Length: 228
Image 1 (cartoon, rainbow, N blue to C red):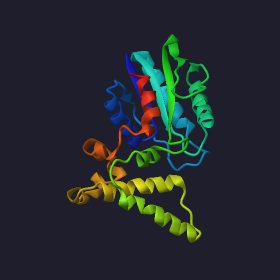
Image 2: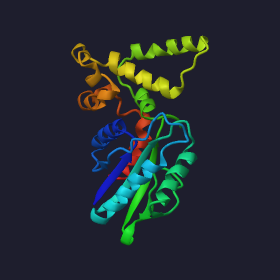
Image 3: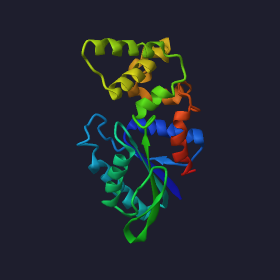
Image 4: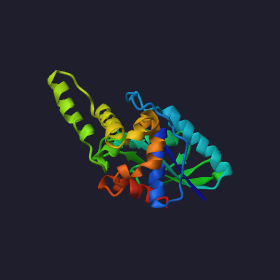
């Protein structure tokens, strides 16, 4: 029996795979859905999630899949809004119970009576955010360069300019990777070794820049233990 989790982006997949390895679970992180992170709520692309679920429905016919997980960002939306979004997509593909909460399996049924269990989780910290919000929270190194962005943010706000939380968190993580955790040697290949564009390198060679015991990861760990 196999377990599969589908995620929004390549970097989500890289991080979630590292978490799975930490927990020693047997889960396949499926090819990302690649939803545009900056797209407005009009929105989070239902078609891409539906297509991913249709592909899994086809796989159910030929592969012994027991459990399926869906992980998407909570962003600035309520858990209920996200649940309704995922539930709507599921019901366009499978016969299924209503999805009423995260970290809880529902039964789904595909063609020819094939069945599996499905659960979802929304990446967040304190009810808001996405992967970068989580990374910012679980940083394990001193971060003077990144932390000085708080003064920069205050300065531009005094000048009547704004940067939203999503943009700020992404900027913070990029500075943390580039200036607070990158060696002089790595700086020579900063795009590949000191940036989110090189997140695969970061997660392979520098897992210790994150605090894997941070309480902000507890809910995500609880979700993954459903599959272990």
